[in-house]
Length: 282
Image 1 (cartoon, rainbow, N blue to C red):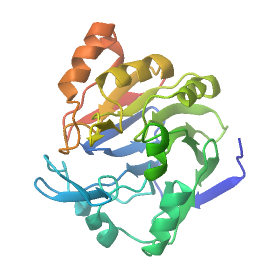
Image 2 (cartoon, rainbow, N blue to C red):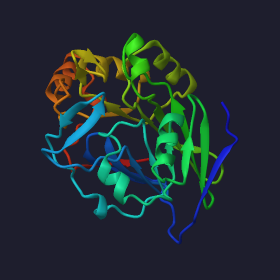
Image 3 (cartoon, one colour):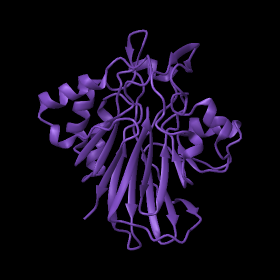
Image 4 (cartoon, one colour):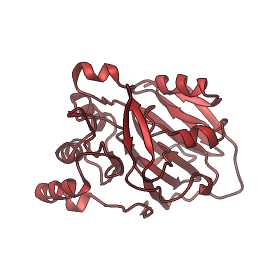
């Protein structure tokens, strides 16, 4: 893995807390992560119920939910992790109102699109490439994980997508917490390599929903989500990216039933929109 890429963030006066952290589920694939002195937003989507996103070739989808908080209510962010360039992950409100100098870690395709929209601090990662983010004495390594948004040749018609591995390290370069975000991927063979490279994953955020367009599955449904847990083997998994848009055809309830049938209840935590998952680190 190439670890030469670096991003240095301004320091502040706060003392990083490695003992505990929290994740606020805002909706869709949007979460607010606060841990080890870092404040990170994923896949920002702040449209409201009834508003539409434009996905591809004139295809639209209506939002069924509201975000738990507004874009203007966010705390000061250190960076954004963006899985890919679809409007349900980076919408027109965000495009207009987000600070154009905020670092955004994403795919090369999305970085190019964002630069065209005036964003000045994009960080493009190819699969398995790592960006080392420093803030004072603390380190965050963000690595791009494999992802495939569609089956076969259909994938070539869709924006490239990445998963993300976030490794929070102290000043002695000891990894204190490892978080995997699947991105909008289907289950496919290259995901098997993730736990080989990154054992001991503390938490996985699973993009589910079973997105279907013209009947074609484009994100993991309930059964694929369960299989992803078996493959990745995180200590805990949290489903996100479900029930929010009309193209999401696999409801959370189906995933809950599949988890129970597989006997994985102890490895899954469910969050309602606006709920916070608090974790402790030994």
